[in-house]
Length: 222
Image 1 (tube, helix red, strand yellow):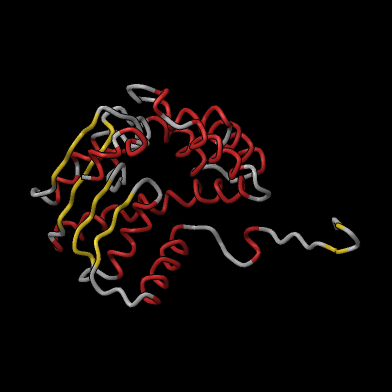
Image 2: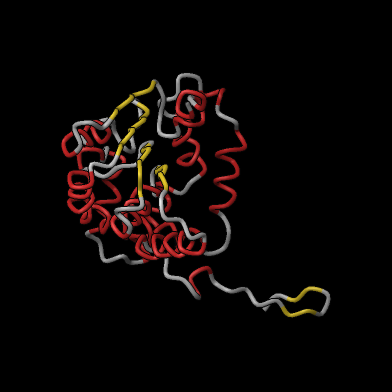
């Protein structure tokens, strides 16, 4: 065990008290909403925030007044080729070799930077500290395993897509989908698909990549 100035330091694993899956992420947000006594609110969902926020919406359908989704996917049509190795991982035995293979492909510095740069009109407009800090945080002890657990669990989000879509149909919740048209992770078809279940959904495709809010901040914010 590491010691500093005679003090014994206990390093607690990330997953010692919390199992990282999307059900638990949503349960944490639901508890947070309850602590704040929120009864009516709109949600802004992006990437992993989509299956988390939409679980909240299923749990509190009368509380959500509107959804702004920025590459917040809820349709198989929106899964780009980026997901192919992850789908392969879903069908794997989740062995250390399986995890090492996917981690090497998707958790590297290059892969992290790519998510910010790819499809962006002017990559120099992306603040380098964004992807640099992202990657630095990914290097925290135990974090790679958390990310791989979430990649593995994402299959359960896809299984929930029909329930999310039924919610869109029955609730008639206001939906604004703002997407980077060059996003290769959640491709634009995922934005257009919202209209299948909510014809009144408003869809805007911007000349941007996955992290569209990094470059189209004003347009998305307004």
